[in-house]
Image (cartoon, rainbow, N blue to C red; front, side, top):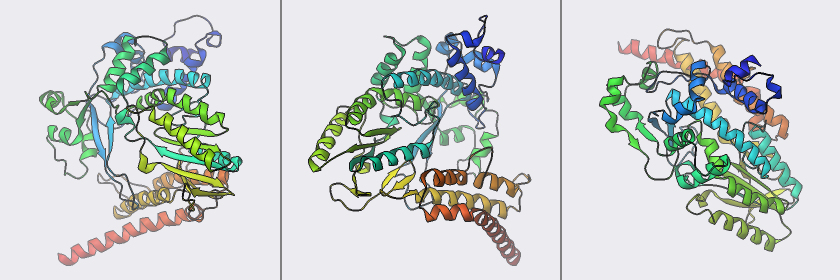
Length: 469
Protein backbone atom coordinates (compact mmCIF):
# COMPACT_ATOMS: atom_id res chain seq x y z
CA UNK A 1 0.00 0.00 0.00
CA UNK A 2 2.83 2.40 0.83
CA UNK A 3 4.46 1.78 -2.53
CA UNK A 4 1.19 2.29 -4.38
CA UNK A 5 0.58 5.59 -2.60
CA UNK A 6 4.13 6.76 -3.35
CA UNK A 7 3.91 5.82 -7.03
CA UNK A 8 0.61 7.69 -7.35
CA UNK A 9 1.62 10.74 -5.28
CA UNK A 10 -1.31 9.99 -2.97
CA UNK A 11 -1.60 11.66 0.43
CA UNK A 12 -5.06 10.34 1.32
CA UNK A 13 -5.63 8.58 4.61
CA UNK A 14 -7.11 5.12 4.64
CA UNK A 15 -6.52 1.84 2.84
CA UNK A 16 -6.05 1.79 -0.91
CA UNK A 17 -8.60 -1.04 -1.27
CA UNK A 18 -11.33 1.31 -0.02
CA UNK A 19 -10.52 4.02 -2.59
CA UNK A 20 -12.44 4.38 -5.87
CA UNK A 21 -9.14 4.92 -7.68
CA UNK A 22 -7.55 1.71 -6.39
CA UNK A 23 -7.76 -0.21 -9.68
CA UNK A 24 -6.18 2.59 -11.69
CA UNK A 25 -3.49 3.24 -9.07
CA UNK A 26 -2.60 -0.45 -8.93
CA UNK A 27 -2.50 -0.62 -12.72
CA UNK A 28 -0.07 2.33 -12.77
CA UNK A 29 2.30 0.52 -10.39
CA UNK A 30 2.18 -2.55 -12.66
CA UNK A 31 2.78 -0.36 -15.71
CA UNK A 32 5.86 1.23 -14.17
CA UNK A 33 7.20 -2.17 -13.13
CA UNK A 34 6.85 -3.41 -16.71
CA UNK A 35 7.77 -0.33 -18.74
CA UNK A 36 9.71 1.88 -16.34
CA UNK A 37 13.25 0.83 -17.21
CA UNK A 38 15.77 3.19 -18.73
CA UNK A 39 16.49 3.08 -22.46
CA UNK A 40 20.04 2.71 -23.66
CA UNK A 41 19.99 4.99 -26.70
CA UNK A 42 21.43 8.50 -26.51
CA UNK A 43 19.15 11.46 -27.24
CA UNK A 44 19.16 15.21 -26.77
CA UNK A 45 18.57 14.87 -23.03
CA UNK A 46 20.06 12.61 -20.36
CA UNK A 47 18.67 9.15 -19.72
CA UNK A 48 15.81 9.01 -17.23
CA UNK A 49 12.97 6.57 -16.59
CA UNK A 50 9.74 6.11 -14.67
CA UNK A 51 11.64 4.10 -12.08
CA UNK A 52 12.91 7.42 -10.72
CA UNK A 53 10.71 9.10 -8.11
CA UNK A 54 11.53 12.57 -9.43
CA UNK A 55 10.52 11.61 -12.97
CA UNK A 56 7.21 10.13 -11.85
CA UNK A 57 6.53 13.28 -9.84
CA UNK A 58 7.22 15.37 -12.93
CA UNK A 59 5.05 13.44 -15.40
CA UNK A 60 2.17 13.34 -12.91
CA UNK A 61 2.26 17.10 -12.38
CA UNK A 62 -0.28 18.33 -14.93
CA UNK A 63 0.95 21.92 -14.83
CA UNK A 64 4.51 20.85 -15.60
CA UNK A 65 3.36 18.67 -18.48
CA UNK A 66 1.28 21.52 -19.90
CA UNK A 67 4.39 23.77 -19.90
CA UNK A 68 6.89 21.06 -20.91
CA UNK A 69 9.24 21.79 -23.81
CA UNK A 70 9.36 18.69 -25.99
CA UNK A 71 12.50 17.81 -27.94
CA UNK A 72 12.46 16.78 -31.62
CA UNK A 73 12.21 13.08 -32.38
CA UNK A 74 15.24 11.35 -33.84
CA UNK A 75 14.14 10.01 -37.20
CA UNK A 76 15.40 6.77 -38.77
CA UNK A 77 14.50 4.93 -41.92
CA UNK A 78 14.43 1.19 -41.36
CA UNK A 79 15.78 -0.32 -44.55
CA UNK A 80 14.55 -3.48 -46.23
CA UNK A 81 15.75 -6.56 -44.37
CA UNK A 82 18.33 -8.80 -46.03
CA UNK A 83 16.70 -12.07 -45.05
CA UNK A 84 14.12 -13.60 -47.38
CA UNK A 85 13.29 -12.52 -50.89
CA UNK A 86 10.39 -10.34 -49.90
CA UNK A 87 10.44 -7.33 -47.65
CA UNK A 88 8.79 -3.97 -47.19
CA UNK A 89 8.36 -2.10 -50.47
CA UNK A 90 9.74 1.05 -48.87
CA UNK A 91 11.65 1.89 -45.69
CA UNK A 92 9.68 2.22 -42.47
CA UNK A 93 9.75 5.63 -40.85
CA UNK A 94 10.67 5.28 -37.17
CA UNK A 95 10.93 8.01 -34.54
CA UNK A 96 12.64 7.94 -31.14
CA UNK A 97 11.57 10.49 -28.54
CA UNK A 98 13.82 11.98 -25.90
CA UNK A 99 13.95 10.29 -22.51
CA UNK A 100 11.80 12.69 -20.48
CA UNK A 101 9.38 13.07 -23.39
CA UNK A 102 9.13 9.30 -23.50
CA UNK A 103 8.17 9.19 -19.83
CA UNK A 104 5.45 11.79 -20.39
CA UNK A 105 4.09 9.88 -23.38
CA UNK A 106 4.15 6.69 -21.30
CA UNK A 107 2.12 8.32 -18.53
CA UNK A 108 -0.53 9.64 -20.91
CA UNK A 109 -0.56 6.43 -22.92
CA UNK A 110 -1.35 4.64 -19.66
CA UNK A 111 -4.15 7.06 -18.76
CA UNK A 112 -5.73 6.93 -22.22
CA UNK A 113 -5.40 3.18 -22.52
CA UNK A 114 -7.06 2.73 -19.13
CA UNK A 115 -10.04 4.77 -20.32
CA UNK A 116 -10.03 3.05 -23.71
CA UNK A 117 -10.25 -0.39 -22.10
CA UNK A 118 -13.31 0.69 -20.11
CA UNK A 119 -15.02 2.27 -23.14
CA UNK A 120 -14.19 -0.68 -25.39
CA UNK A 121 -16.02 -3.04 -23.01
CA UNK A 122 -19.01 -0.70 -22.82
CA UNK A 123 -19.27 -0.47 -26.61
CA UNK A 124 -18.74 -4.14 -27.35
CA UNK A 125 -15.38 -3.78 -29.10
CA UNK A 126 -13.12 -5.01 -26.32
CA UNK A 127 -12.08 -8.06 -28.35
CA UNK A 128 -11.82 -6.23 -31.69
CA UNK A 129 -8.60 -4.26 -31.30
CA UNK A 130 -5.91 -6.71 -30.21
CA UNK A 131 -2.72 -4.70 -30.73
CA UNK A 132 -1.02 -2.93 -27.82
CA UNK A 133 -3.68 -3.96 -25.30
CA UNK A 134 -2.59 -4.52 -21.71
CA UNK A 135 -5.77 -6.01 -20.30
CA UNK A 136 -6.43 -9.00 -22.55
CA UNK A 137 -3.77 -11.32 -21.16
CA UNK A 138 -3.17 -12.87 -24.58
CA UNK A 139 -0.64 -12.80 -27.40
CA UNK A 140 -0.62 -13.38 -31.17
CA UNK A 141 -0.87 -17.15 -30.73
CA UNK A 142 -4.10 -16.77 -28.75
CA UNK A 143 -5.54 -14.21 -31.17
CA UNK A 144 -4.72 -16.26 -34.27
CA UNK A 145 -6.06 -19.48 -32.73
CA UNK A 146 -9.31 -17.75 -31.79
CA UNK A 147 -9.81 -16.56 -35.38
CA UNK A 148 -8.93 -19.89 -37.02
CA UNK A 149 -11.18 -21.78 -34.61
CA UNK A 150 -14.02 -19.35 -35.35
CA UNK A 151 -13.61 -19.84 -39.11
CA UNK A 152 -13.66 -23.61 -38.72
CA UNK A 153 -16.77 -23.35 -36.57
CA UNK A 154 -18.71 -21.40 -39.21
CA UNK A 155 -18.70 -24.30 -41.66
CA UNK A 156 -18.84 -22.06 -44.73
CA UNK A 157 -17.81 -18.44 -44.56
CA UNK A 158 -16.43 -15.42 -46.36
CA UNK A 159 -13.08 -14.12 -45.07
CA UNK A 160 -11.66 -10.66 -45.78
CA UNK A 161 -8.05 -9.89 -44.84
CA UNK A 162 -6.51 -6.48 -45.45
CA UNK A 163 -4.70 -3.46 -44.08
CA UNK A 164 -4.70 0.28 -44.31
CA UNK A 165 -2.15 2.29 -46.30
CA UNK A 166 0.47 4.22 -44.27
CA UNK A 167 -1.83 3.98 -41.28
CA UNK A 168 0.08 6.09 -38.73
CA UNK A 169 1.18 8.59 -41.37
CA UNK A 170 -2.42 9.28 -42.42
CA UNK A 171 -4.20 9.76 -39.09
CA UNK A 172 -6.13 13.02 -39.46
CA UNK A 173 -5.47 15.36 -36.53
CA UNK A 174 -8.89 16.98 -36.20
CA UNK A 175 -10.66 13.64 -36.21
CA UNK A 176 -8.19 12.24 -33.66
CA UNK A 177 -8.77 15.25 -31.42
CA UNK A 178 -12.54 14.72 -31.61
CA UNK A 179 -12.17 11.09 -30.61
CA UNK A 180 -9.88 12.06 -27.71
CA UNK A 181 -12.42 14.58 -26.42
CA UNK A 182 -15.14 11.97 -26.75
CA UNK A 183 -13.13 9.46 -24.74
CA UNK A 184 -12.30 12.01 -22.03
CA UNK A 185 -15.88 13.30 -21.93
CA UNK A 186 -14.85 16.92 -22.60
CA UNK A 187 -15.53 19.50 -25.26
CA UNK A 188 -11.98 20.82 -25.14
CA UNK A 189 -8.79 18.99 -24.22
CA UNK A 190 -7.31 19.93 -20.81
CA UNK A 191 -4.05 21.85 -21.07
CA UNK A 192 -1.81 18.90 -20.24
CA UNK A 193 -3.56 16.57 -22.68
CA UNK A 194 -3.48 19.31 -25.32
CA UNK A 195 0.28 19.74 -24.84
CA UNK A 196 0.78 16.01 -25.38
CA UNK A 197 -1.61 15.95 -28.36
CA UNK A 198 0.01 18.97 -29.99
CA UNK A 199 3.50 17.56 -29.70
CA UNK A 200 2.59 14.10 -30.99
CA UNK A 201 0.73 15.53 -34.00
CA UNK A 202 2.73 18.67 -34.85
CA UNK A 203 5.86 16.75 -33.95
CA UNK A 204 9.37 17.82 -34.90
CA UNK A 205 11.91 15.38 -36.33
CA UNK A 206 15.67 15.43 -36.84
CA UNK A 207 17.14 12.95 -39.31
CA UNK A 208 19.80 10.63 -37.92
CA UNK A 209 22.23 11.42 -40.76
CA UNK A 210 22.07 15.15 -39.96
CA UNK A 211 22.58 14.46 -36.25
CA UNK A 212 25.72 12.48 -37.03
CA UNK A 213 27.02 15.40 -39.13
CA UNK A 214 26.13 17.89 -36.38
CA UNK A 215 28.12 15.74 -33.94
CA UNK A 216 31.18 16.09 -36.19
CA UNK A 217 31.13 12.41 -37.16
CA UNK A 218 30.80 10.45 -40.41
CA UNK A 219 27.67 8.47 -41.22
CA UNK A 220 29.89 5.98 -43.09
CA UNK A 221 31.95 5.12 -40.03
CA UNK A 222 31.39 1.53 -38.95
CA UNK A 223 29.61 1.37 -35.61
CA UNK A 224 28.75 5.08 -35.59
CA UNK A 225 25.38 4.44 -33.94
CA UNK A 226 26.96 2.53 -31.05
CA UNK A 227 29.62 5.21 -30.74
CA UNK A 228 27.09 8.02 -30.33
CA UNK A 229 24.85 5.91 -28.08
CA UNK A 230 27.72 5.58 -25.61
CA UNK A 231 27.55 9.34 -25.04
CA UNK A 232 25.51 10.99 -22.32
CA UNK A 233 23.66 12.98 -24.99
CA UNK A 234 23.84 12.52 -28.73
CA UNK A 235 24.78 16.20 -29.19
CA UNK A 236 26.24 18.75 -26.83
CA UNK A 237 24.04 21.69 -25.93
CA UNK A 238 26.02 23.94 -28.26
CA UNK A 239 25.89 21.44 -31.15
CA UNK A 240 22.13 21.24 -30.69
CA UNK A 241 21.69 25.03 -30.77
CA UNK A 242 24.05 25.50 -33.72
CA UNK A 243 22.26 22.97 -35.92
CA UNK A 244 18.56 23.54 -35.24
CA UNK A 245 18.12 24.27 -38.96
CA UNK A 246 17.91 20.50 -39.49
CA UNK A 247 14.72 20.20 -37.43
CA UNK A 248 11.62 19.53 -39.54
CA UNK A 249 8.11 20.04 -38.14
CA UNK A 250 4.99 18.18 -39.26
CA UNK A 251 2.49 20.85 -40.33
CA UNK A 252 0.49 18.64 -42.72
CA UNK A 253 -2.47 18.10 -40.41
CA UNK A 254 -2.08 14.33 -40.66
CA UNK A 255 0.20 11.67 -39.20
CA UNK A 256 1.73 10.73 -35.88
CA UNK A 257 5.22 9.26 -35.39
CA UNK A 258 5.34 5.48 -35.38
CA UNK A 259 7.42 4.23 -32.50
CA UNK A 260 6.41 6.59 -29.71
CA UNK A 261 4.91 5.09 -26.52
CA UNK A 262 1.57 6.81 -27.12
CA UNK A 263 1.11 6.21 -30.86
CA UNK A 264 -0.51 2.78 -30.51
CA UNK A 265 -3.25 3.80 -28.08
CA UNK A 266 -3.98 6.93 -30.14
CA UNK A 267 -4.46 4.70 -33.18
CA UNK A 268 -6.95 2.53 -31.27
CA UNK A 269 -8.84 5.62 -30.08
CA UNK A 270 -8.88 6.94 -33.65
CA UNK A 271 -10.56 3.73 -34.87
CA UNK A 272 -13.17 3.43 -32.08
CA UNK A 273 -16.21 4.55 -34.09
CA UNK A 274 -15.19 2.52 -37.13
CA UNK A 275 -14.57 -0.57 -35.01
CA UNK A 276 -17.97 -0.18 -33.33
CA UNK A 277 -19.84 0.17 -36.63
CA UNK A 278 -18.12 -2.79 -38.26
CA UNK A 279 -18.40 -4.94 -35.15
CA UNK A 280 -22.13 -4.32 -34.90
CA UNK A 281 -22.65 -5.51 -38.46
CA UNK A 282 -20.26 -8.48 -38.42
CA UNK A 283 -21.33 -9.81 -35.02
CA UNK A 284 -24.97 -9.38 -36.07
CA UNK A 285 -24.24 -11.83 -38.90
CA UNK A 286 -22.67 -14.34 -36.53
CA UNK A 287 -19.16 -13.44 -37.70
CA UNK A 288 -15.90 -12.23 -36.22
CA UNK A 289 -13.98 -8.96 -36.73
CA UNK A 290 -10.46 -8.42 -35.45
CA UNK A 291 -8.04 -5.53 -36.04
CA UNK A 292 -4.35 -5.60 -35.16
CA UNK A 293 -3.21 -1.99 -35.64
CA UNK A 294 -3.57 -1.47 -39.42
CA UNK A 295 -4.24 -5.16 -40.24
CA UNK A 296 -7.76 -6.55 -40.05
CA UNK A 297 -9.64 -9.80 -40.58
CA UNK A 298 -13.37 -10.31 -41.00
CA UNK A 299 -15.13 -13.67 -41.28
CA UNK A 300 -18.90 -14.03 -41.76
CA UNK A 301 -20.88 -17.22 -42.36
CA UNK A 302 -22.61 -17.53 -45.74
CA UNK A 303 -25.00 -19.90 -47.45
CA UNK A 304 -24.35 -18.97 -51.05
CA UNK A 305 -22.76 -16.62 -53.61
CA UNK A 306 -25.43 -13.94 -53.22
CA UNK A 307 -24.86 -13.69 -49.50
CA UNK A 308 -21.10 -13.32 -49.99
CA UNK A 309 -21.62 -10.42 -52.41
CA UNK A 310 -24.03 -8.75 -49.99
CA UNK A 311 -21.51 -8.90 -47.15
CA UNK A 312 -18.69 -7.63 -49.37
CA UNK A 313 -20.77 -4.65 -50.49
CA UNK A 314 -21.86 -3.75 -46.97
CA UNK A 315 -18.42 -4.13 -45.38
CA UNK A 316 -16.62 -2.12 -48.03
CA UNK A 317 -19.27 0.60 -47.82
CA UNK A 318 -18.37 1.04 -44.14
CA UNK A 319 -14.69 1.31 -45.06
CA UNK A 320 -15.40 3.86 -47.81
CA UNK A 321 -17.34 5.99 -45.31
CA UNK A 322 -13.93 6.57 -43.69
CA UNK A 323 -12.42 8.02 -46.89
CA UNK A 324 -9.97 10.77 -46.00
CA UNK A 325 -9.48 9.27 -42.54
CA UNK A 326 -8.13 5.84 -43.49
CA UNK A 327 -7.30 4.30 -46.86
CA UNK A 328 -7.57 0.63 -47.74
CA UNK A 329 -4.43 -0.89 -49.26
CA UNK A 330 -6.14 -2.70 -52.12
CA UNK A 331 -3.15 -4.74 -53.26
CA UNK A 332 -2.91 -6.26 -49.77
CA UNK A 333 -6.64 -6.92 -49.40
CA UNK A 334 -7.65 -10.51 -50.07
CA UNK A 335 -10.99 -12.33 -50.12
CA UNK A 336 -11.39 -16.03 -49.35
CA UNK A 337 -14.03 -18.71 -48.99
CA UNK A 338 -13.81 -21.39 -46.34
CA UNK A 339 -15.77 -24.49 -47.20
CA UNK A 340 -15.32 -28.23 -46.78
CA UNK A 341 -12.28 -27.66 -44.59
CA UNK A 342 -10.36 -25.69 -47.23
CA UNK A 343 -9.45 -22.06 -47.87
CA UNK A 344 -10.01 -20.90 -51.45
CA UNK A 345 -9.52 -17.48 -52.99
CA UNK A 346 -12.64 -15.54 -53.93
CA UNK A 347 -14.05 -15.38 -56.54
CA UNK A 348 -11.61 -17.67 -58.44
CA UNK A 349 -11.85 -20.46 -55.82
CA UNK A 350 -8.20 -21.41 -56.30
CA UNK A 351 -6.53 -23.16 -53.33
CA UNK A 352 -5.12 -20.54 -50.94
CA UNK A 353 -4.13 -19.87 -47.35
CA UNK A 354 -4.79 -17.03 -44.91
CA UNK A 355 -1.73 -15.13 -43.67
CA UNK A 356 -2.63 -13.73 -40.25
CA UNK A 357 -0.50 -12.60 -37.28
CA UNK A 358 2.51 -14.62 -38.41
CA UNK A 359 0.64 -17.85 -39.22
CA UNK A 360 -0.54 -19.54 -42.42
CA UNK A 361 -3.91 -21.31 -42.34
CA UNK A 362 -5.14 -23.41 -45.28
CA UNK A 363 -8.41 -24.44 -43.68
CA UNK A 364 -7.01 -27.57 -42.12
CA UNK A 365 -3.39 -27.05 -41.13
CA UNK A 366 -1.66 -24.10 -39.45
CA UNK A 367 2.00 -23.21 -39.98
CA UNK A 368 4.29 -20.52 -38.63
CA UNK A 369 4.98 -18.10 -41.47
CA UNK A 370 8.15 -19.41 -43.19
CA UNK A 371 9.63 -15.91 -43.35
CA UNK A 372 9.58 -15.77 -39.53
CA UNK A 373 11.73 -18.89 -39.41
CA UNK A 374 14.05 -17.48 -42.08
CA UNK A 375 14.34 -14.28 -40.02
CA UNK A 376 15.24 -16.30 -36.91
CA UNK A 377 17.97 -18.25 -38.73
CA UNK A 378 19.37 -15.11 -40.36
CA UNK A 379 19.73 -13.20 -37.09
CA UNK A 380 21.01 -16.20 -35.18
CA UNK A 381 23.67 -17.05 -37.77
CA UNK A 382 24.82 -13.46 -38.08
CA UNK A 383 25.26 -13.18 -34.30
CA UNK A 384 26.81 -16.63 -33.91
CA UNK A 385 29.32 -16.11 -36.70
CA UNK A 386 30.31 -12.77 -35.17
CA UNK A 387 31.05 -14.58 -31.89
CA UNK A 388 33.07 -17.19 -33.77
CA UNK A 389 35.07 -14.68 -35.82
CA UNK A 390 35.88 -12.62 -32.72
CA UNK A 391 37.10 -15.67 -30.79
CA UNK A 392 34.62 -14.69 -28.08
CA UNK A 393 35.93 -11.12 -27.68
CA UNK A 394 34.16 -7.86 -28.45
CA UNK A 395 35.85 -4.91 -30.19
CA UNK A 396 36.69 -3.56 -26.72
CA UNK A 397 38.16 -6.82 -25.46
CA UNK A 398 35.14 -7.92 -23.44
CA UNK A 399 34.36 -11.62 -23.31
CA UNK A 400 31.36 -12.72 -25.37
CA UNK A 401 30.00 -15.97 -24.02
CA UNK A 402 28.28 -18.45 -26.30
CA UNK A 403 25.88 -18.89 -23.40
CA UNK A 404 24.37 -15.54 -24.31
CA UNK A 405 23.60 -16.87 -27.79
CA UNK A 406 21.56 -19.71 -26.34
CA UNK A 407 19.74 -17.32 -24.00
CA UNK A 408 18.67 -15.28 -27.04
CA UNK A 409 18.15 -17.99 -29.64
CA UNK A 410 17.21 -21.03 -27.57
CA UNK A 411 15.08 -21.46 -24.43
CA UNK A 412 15.14 -18.69 -21.82
CA UNK A 413 13.21 -18.79 -18.54
CA UNK A 414 13.33 -15.01 -18.06
CA UNK A 415 12.64 -13.71 -21.56
CA UNK A 416 10.69 -15.66 -24.16
CA UNK A 417 12.63 -16.47 -27.32
CA UNK A 418 11.47 -17.46 -30.79
CA UNK A 419 12.01 -21.11 -29.86
CA UNK A 420 9.77 -20.70 -26.80
CA UNK A 421 7.21 -19.00 -29.04
CA UNK A 422 7.36 -21.81 -31.61
CA UNK A 423 6.95 -24.47 -28.90
CA UNK A 424 3.92 -22.69 -27.45
CA UNK A 425 2.36 -22.29 -30.90
CA UNK A 426 2.94 -25.95 -31.73
CA UNK A 427 1.28 -27.00 -28.49
CA UNK A 428 -1.68 -24.60 -28.52
CA UNK A 429 -2.51 -24.88 -32.23
CA UNK A 430 -1.51 -28.48 -32.78
CA UNK A 431 0.67 -27.34 -35.68
CA UNK A 432 1.32 -29.68 -38.59
CA UNK A 433 4.46 -27.86 -39.65
CA UNK A 434 7.71 -29.70 -40.55
CA UNK A 435 9.69 -26.43 -40.64
CA UNK A 436 8.66 -25.54 -37.10
CA UNK A 437 9.43 -29.06 -35.91
CA UNK A 438 12.87 -28.82 -37.53
CA UNK A 439 13.81 -25.47 -36.02
CA UNK A 440 12.73 -26.61 -32.54
CA UNK A 441 14.59 -29.91 -32.81
CA UNK A 442 17.82 -28.73 -34.46
CA UNK A 443 18.29 -25.09 -33.41
CA UNK A 444 21.05 -25.81 -30.88
CA UNK A 445 22.96 -27.75 -33.49
CA UNK A 446 22.51 -24.86 -35.94
CA UNK A 447 23.82 -22.36 -33.37
CA UNK A 448 26.95 -24.45 -32.78
CA UNK A 449 27.49 -24.82 -36.54
CA UNK A 450 27.19 -21.05 -37.04
CA UNK A 451 29.76 -20.34 -34.31
CA UNK A 452 32.10 -22.89 -35.88
CA UNK A 453 31.59 -21.27 -39.30
CA UNK A 454 32.70 -17.95 -37.83
CA UNK A 455 35.83 -19.50 -36.33
CA UNK A 456 36.66 -21.18 -39.66
CA UNK A 457 36.13 -17.92 -41.56
CA UNK A 458 38.53 -16.14 -39.20
CA UNK A 459 41.20 -18.82 -39.65
CA UNK A 460 40.98 -18.51 -43.43
CA UNK A 461 41.24 -14.72 -43.17
CA UNK A 462 44.32 -14.94 -40.91
CA UNK A 463 45.90 -17.42 -43.29
CA UNK A 464 45.33 -15.15 -46.28
CA UNK A 465 46.78 -12.15 -44.42
CA UNK A 466 49.86 -14.13 -43.40
CA UNK A 467 50.38 -15.41 -46.94
CA UNK A 468 50.03 -11.89 -48.37
CA UNK A 469 52.47 -10.61 -45.74
